[in-house]
Length: 222
Image 1 (cartoon, rainbow, N blue to C red):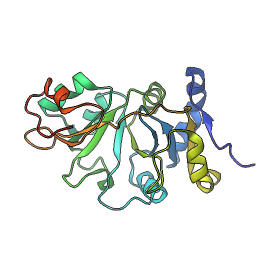
Image 2: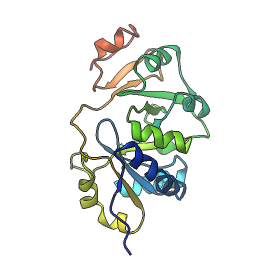
Image 3: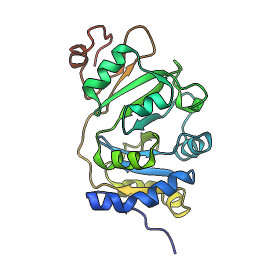
Image 4: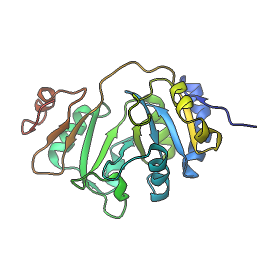
């Protein structure tokens, strides 16, 4: 019997019912498709083999890393990532929310595929309630990248993923959590915190002016 193409992941009861299967899939090194506060994402555990599964599924070129989703800031410290004072201020003010911080550290804990050209690791505390519940149950961060093929807009409904990756779903490589249709929204703002001053490297939902109310030394515009 072929696996069901998607698993309901909308109401609190559906989220609870989906946890066991989703966690088992992550433990097996599989790729999970899930809703976020912006678009649908793909994610895995952060070990090397799991990340490579995601690389193969997405056809990701070298030098283009995935970010990490966390369920609470303590996971940043458990990964030995460095949170400078200005980054801590940004996290305290805007997490959970559409802010991604690129942090130094994590040596020996985080695969090279998760590091950008500057050597940092991108991290976001997601406000999506279902994914936060999943991450809390899992107890570890998961990787995140948009669920789409190159040149195709990121998925905003689970059926778009089913249409693009039917073979991966049938093989059991991809497990899809269906959180319904997501409302259009801008991506997270990405701030590089690996240098002496925070720097906006991707404009997004939070403007530079808003971020400077918290950290006046921020450079770059969004």
